Image (cartoon, rainbow, N blue to C red):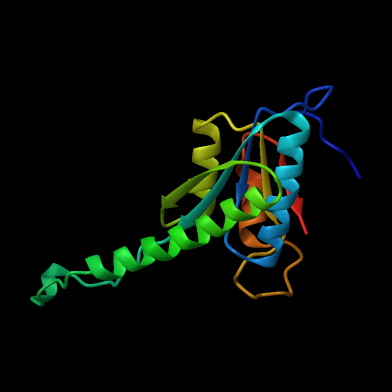
Length: 158
């Protein structure tokens, strides 16, 4: 096994830690771990949740009126805010005040990677598996995607 230290400094120090949160058991553990690291390093902690907007494939070319989906979109946003608040609460229970960041995007991975780069996050913490329930995977698609595409170190928590 080859350990890559390409992006790791000689001594780890973090000032901005982001934890991806979807409400799952592994995500709760990730918040607790991220909060512990934030305390240790005196780092800012950001709990991030990405939700997808409900979409229905209709075409204006079909001649059918395009329905107003604003109620569904607002419900998705409200559900996302509730999940995010739970993640921020887990951090608070761990003794760390965390900033919450809610994003709407079709790709959870892309939204998290872009936010982390934009905000100059030093470390991303994510749970092994999320809410998909597909337990046969060794590592979930979001955690795997973050490991593959993030500009900074990614810590995967169980």
